[in-house]
Length: 401
Image (cartoon, rainbow, N blue to C red; front, side, top):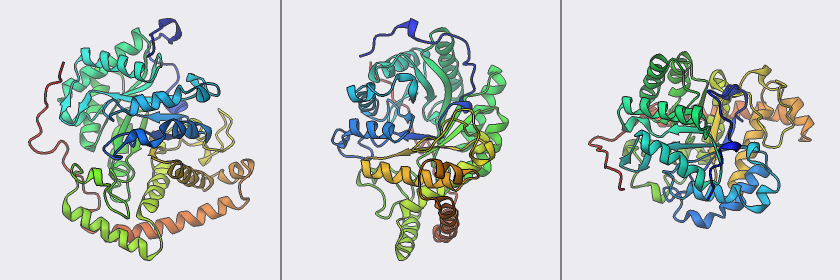
């Protein structure tokens, strides 16, 4: 466990650099290090997965105390001797969360926020956390969220254990309304907001409805997560562990399976199409609330040189994996998306990839768009459907001491 050493932490008020100037636009999500998606997270060889993620150039990790053993497993990977020999703590970003403890237990009190931050630092053996989100803010009152944000900022300013502060959740209206209130009532906008399940093959409301409001509320970065809609957008349907808790209605699941069958007729996996579509859409449509950080993942990049997408920010996405194969597949997709951007041809050439990868990526983007439109027709009335969160009848259970 880490012993807190104040001398190693940057003490100041708000960090001088906007998060959007340094955060990499690709983040590895550790939600898969959890029994919600894998029966035995300890059987995933997460140490090697974390090492390979770093080795392939990814420099950001998203996690949460709510994700079961995820923080512990991530911490073990980041602090394994082979990883520590190659990468210093300042070489990567850790984004975690606070407030959500169990399925029906939330605690946004200042006391618990302090404890949560301390526990996260201990689990991951770090003196500071780059980003801390208030987790799933729709489950508690708005005043509680604002109080938690203020406490995180106090920790940031007085202790330096937190660098940037944000909120995460599902209902877009709640995220936007909170961002607007926080800007108005604290005279400081949020550094970052994470929206999950709202920029997918099935739901594009984050781009059309969320970005304008969040940008107007002064939010610096908006990240999109759960590109498969919590595992729904897969050829094989929901993972077995998710069948009981996934909030999608039966009709929606049936429509998605029709879409999966349609993909099979074109020898395509629904999950591959869904991830590619979401990443391609968000890299561009999320650029207004994106990042200028190192895109990495095997490309040549010099900080400060705007060589992709005409120097615009890139929308920031969270992508998870349970195996090395899934990781490499996701990173190959990510690189091909970057190759198709303005300036991507030069990057591909410098990185030593196929000299026509830029042209291939443009053609692939057009093919993805056409197939995605056909799949969205299969989804039909369930396009842009948002399930209720929290579910009807939800009641917060007190935290056990």
